[in-house]
Every structure is written in structure tokens, then in C-alpha cells.
Image (cartoon, rainbow, N blue to C red):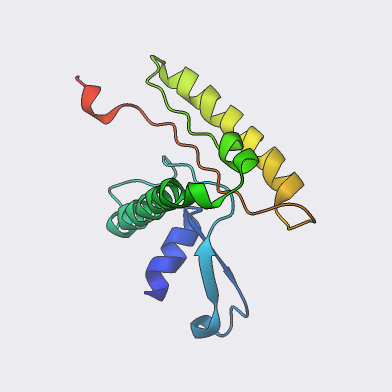
Length: 140
């Protein structure tokens, strides 16, 4: 397990904290912010673990949104009306996708820098952004 976590750290998917000299006591977590999906080669030994990690992350993200749909009525109207879900199918080149991904990272980093810690009158807000080619539309 430790070897897999270290491999995921090499490609920027995980971070550890604690004393590196005591590897069993390290605390591992997903990187704050996001990951570059092209950061690893699917031919490497760790590709299966990296793919599994990504799928677990996506399942967890979907669960958060499903929980919101279930529990939204428990929240005040101003919070319900402020919540947003946006998706769309765009026609882009690889360069366009790279630019969009860069813009999304910059936007998310800006908000993360401003609001990563609790302050009075705030609540945790889960934000998720994905930009990938539509997987069923590829032909050579």
C-alpha cells in the first residue's frame, strides 16, 4: 500500500504529512485542488492504482452531489438558490481543452486561496470541475 501511495504522490495525486523516517505513521490525502489527468502514463506499473484512485474520487464527488439533492430542502432558500450545477458538451481542439483546463485551475486556485479556511458566516462548499474529451466520440 505504501508503495502505491508513493507512486501516486510522484504523479501529483496524493500528498503525505508527518515524519518521512516513519513511513507507517504518514498521513496520506488527496492533493488539495486538482490533478492533471495526463500526469501519468497508463503503461506504468502504478496505472491500475491511479485509475482506481480516480474512480473512487469520482464516486465520492457524485455522492456529495446526490446528498445535496436529497438534503437541499434542509437549507435556507438563499443557499439553495446560490447552488449551481453546470455542464455542457463543447466542441474543442486539444489546445482549447488545455486553455479551458488552465482557466479552471486558475479560477479554482483563486477561490481556494481566498476561502480554504472557515471564517464567520461561511459554510463548506464543495466545488468540482472536470474537463475531458467526450469518451464515446473518438475515432482514428
